Image (tube, rainbow, N blue to C red; front, side):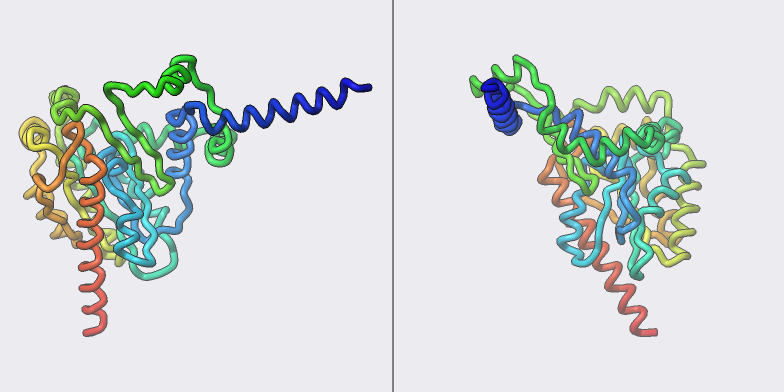
Amino acid sequence: MKRQPDIIMTLVMASVLIGLLSFVLPKNKEKYLRDRFWAQKTFSPAKYQIVVMGDSRIYRGVLPKIIEKNLPGMKVLNFGYSNGGLNPEMFKAAEGKLSAKGQDKVIIFGVSPNCLTAFTQKNEQFQQERTRPREDVFERLYLNGILYQFSATSPEGIRDLMKNRQSSGYYLNEYHSDGYVQSEKFPVDTMEAIPSYTDDFANYKVEKKYIDGLIHQVKIWSDSGICVVGFRPPVSMPMRTLEDTMGLYNEAVLSGLFREAGGHWIDLKPNAYKTYDGSHLNEESAIRLSEDLALNIRELINAKESLIRVH
């Protein structure tokens, strides 16, 4: 009869100990927080006034909270994906995130050269997330935050924690529910991404048919009253040169077509931003880019409202 209280007490103490350890031991954020992040982005509801589209340069380079801070009352979603192509499938998905309420609706295109090549047109990451079994999506959306607290660690991770051992290099991913991934890499190597893009552009170039598809969508949205904004995500100068030569990217021609279709192209100063690998912005530059985008959008909205008042 005396053993039952002992067992209960042991279970209580074990539960408390496990709970305390869950707040101290290293956790697997790349498994649980990453998976929840992509599910939240893909299945986010239609409640946004601004949706930002593009590839990894967008989801690692544009902070919705910074844009929202500069544009009070407007809800922003970062809808960027790895190797995200700009094509009808993604146009439809992005439009589906816009709120039905309110008059001011904005679609922002981060037009990287890679988004206009055959390499990205399958939108493999988006498709993978969109077609997951319902039970997997439910787990990622509603259980992963809890599972993360009790995620497995390794003896090496515990050892490094106990010894307060710092790695000589690291790659940081911090996942935000608005679709942005804060990224940093140490040591910084602004030439790191050049070899992989050289390989890509050896096989894939910017193609006219993908440009035509983008411009066609810009006109459709512009004619329907949606404010369409485009820009070239900043990269290092060697990367920019590679894209213009091997990738056949011509920003002057593209921006002209974009404007003719009713869109608004933002000309950025490449030297105003810094990357950690030649392709993706560090946090400071991502914040600066987001502020610059917000400033331009505010001017467009103010100009639209002034025109309405005049008429």
